[in-house]
Image (cartoon, rainbow, N blue to C red):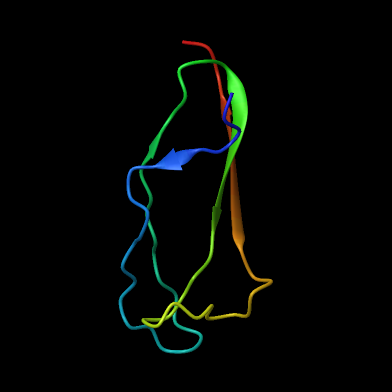
Length: 68
């Protein structure tokens, strides 16, 4: 079984944001059909694909999928 949670999009646009300004980011995921714990890993990059906060900064999303 794949342990990664797949998003419906591989890239998400983020509006220009000033330092210290909050921004809301929303991601839609397709939940696996079986009960499990899965993760999705994200990195924020600029237009050239360079990580905005260095290569060590990543966002981990962990989801527990419960039986229906």
